[in-house]
Image (cartoon, rainbow, N blue to C red):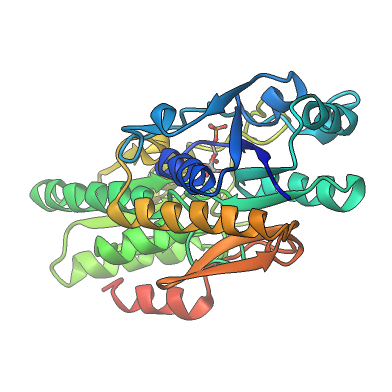
Length: 344
Ligand code: F6P
């Protein structure tokens, strides 16, 4: 019987994590399960930094951005003796299992811990990039879309006033979900995403065509991970972060510069960056976080380990972590084709 579990949030933060923490703790308390929250993702597990979480500790969290537990990109597989230290932390705190809230990296590490070391755990997907498979939505995505589409709206009016090209760069490392959703919602005239290599000359021709038909302004939404057709545009080599991951951000400048050079239209850039990850979660982010938090404890009570929660419309799903992490969920071509209809 499950009596005590550990809870952690790993990887980049996003809005809605606190709603998920609250849901896990509420549902667990209802069922008489104690929850220990680890600080800063796997780092807190490795360093055994945990605190008991109860109803009182999670009051007032629902609408707050960030994560009350803190987070990091530390992985047990890249730390000395990492797997053994996870097992040791579980023994010391007498934990029967873990609930891990994370994106693709954190969930893949969770799967390995489960499969290779038998760690009993359940995952909850969060990432503004929305690229985790097995669920329609990941926590944080819709809040990021709200921020990005509002930015597109605001850029629209100023682009029109000044007859300028406004390039809006949004996050989206391997998948262009934010760019496609915000671009569609914000009436973008071009959307560049990692799934569809772009030809900068074709984009420039398109903007010139718009101008030729009386539309002297354009809004171009660019995902930070978009890639040009090989050989068409040189991109600077990105620096790497402390975990060796390319630190993206800045493609918007290259695109704006190239468009201005090819069209002569004055082009400006807005890089939204971490604004997309912070602040108040949208109602739907709070709702799916609550669904998945409750669903995670239901899975824990059944000792259904190695699973990840998800949503399909209003339904809460439980899918094997192995299926959810096999490959990234990318923007389907058909959806991108819909957005192209409005490139105008
Ligand atoms: O993985 C989610 C994400 O938001 C990416 O889109 C982005 O490239 C990355 O996080 C940035 O993370 P950080 O600057 O926090 O390392």
